[in-house]
Amino acid sequence: MVAARQALHEGTRPSGVITRHDIHGDLVVDADVLVIGSGAGGATVAAELAEAGYDVVVLEEGSYYQTRDFTADTSGMVRQLYRDGGATMALGNPPILYQEGRAVGGSTVINGGMSWRTPDKILARWEKEAGLHGIAKDLEAHFARVERRINVAPMDAEAIGTDNHLLKQGADALGWNIIGNLRNQNHCVGSNRCAFGCPTGAKQSSLVSYIPRALHYGARIFADVKVKRIMRHGKRATGAIGTVNGTPHHVTVRAKLVCLSAGAIHTPALLARSGFRTPSGQLGHNLSMHPNVKVVAIFDQPVTNWKGAHQAFQVREFQDQGLVFAAIGMPPSVLAMSFPHRGRQLGELMSRYDNMMLAGMLCEDTRTGRVRSVNGKPQAFYQLADEDAANLKRGVSLLSELLFAAGAKQILLPFHGAKDLHSADDARALLKANTPTRGWEVVTVHMMGTARMGADRSAAVTDAHGMVHDADRLMIADASLFPTPIGVNPMETIMALATRGAAHVIDNARRLLS
Image (cartoon, rainbow, N blue to C red; front, side):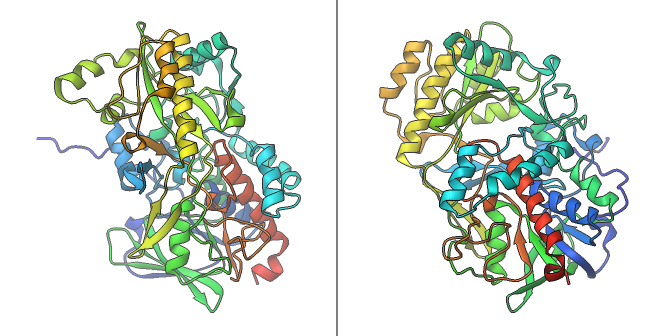
């Protein structure tokens, strides 16, 4: 009997990548800069500072995989690339499922690749409310640099699938504004595997863009190392101690500067368990999540949502009202898990998979939650605001109307016990229906704001460049910096802020790296 092959395998690694297989005892490493996390923020800081000539070490809890390791085994990819198999949630009514990447490259390995600059109105709000004067103008050059590094470009026409053409068809029929997506991709072939590791390397995640650049300039990346705490001497960060996954071994990194890029859930928890406090008392507060609900439309004709690029278009008609719509293809196993149906009923429903189209929305939330440390581990708490719930419900009605305009015959809703829709009139009538939020299926991949930046140290956790208030040689470079939600996909904003933070370090190297 042949033993089952692991869903992912680890091939020959490039020089500079160290994994659990290379560490056979406790290890002490010295560096100029320690970066904790290798996603959109951490990989960017590592590459920028390594290129500037500094000795950079990156600690990443997840494993290192290469493009050839990403297969069509969806369950295998989820187990390997997602934290806790993608089953983490923020507690509230309703609970909100959220997903984080856990691999070298972080969540950029499993996101859809949407690459949008921070909207002007958001930057203006940051300048006014957070005192980040001049940030809009300052970020222009950093956005341009990021876009060159990750090859931000429109989709090739031949890579756009039927589901996205149907989204555009419905929007055009209603006269709604719809735009082509900008994505960090180099001639995507449209396999729609973005969320499970790009199997062609076309998606320019940190794994294939900033990480190789950092390695080229001498950075060292330790994968499979979970950081337990940041070391400090008084208020000065001096490095970190981590454990090697699956072993009793420890890795200690001593550094002149520590950059924390663990994401909006884990960054505040790591700071808290390391003993860092900020004058504002806001560490872990201000959690925004861009709550998202989906609908599944069934057409008479084949949709084959597994063909074509992930989110080739975005409907921006209601962006000023906090809603953005997109089509999102998902493998049958993932989609089936989201249905309440069981047994024969589920089998009959899934037999129509090729005729299904999955579409969803991003909602710019108006209220925030919090990340607390429970026994040293982070737990998110988030209560969906009544006004945001009303906006999501309105979004479901509008999106369903669009899908009927595109030819849908039936729409399954994300509300427990709600009847399927069969017409645009049904979609409009949904606004008056009683749909308690406790029965909603709400998800997100955009967690932001738990270590917000701002000029006022009594209201923010870091300064305008991500340097932690009331701490020395400690900076943050991830979405926890956002003072507010941004209403678009956050990856490019994270990378631009990280580039700006790295430039600040370089400009102040005598003070920060001596």
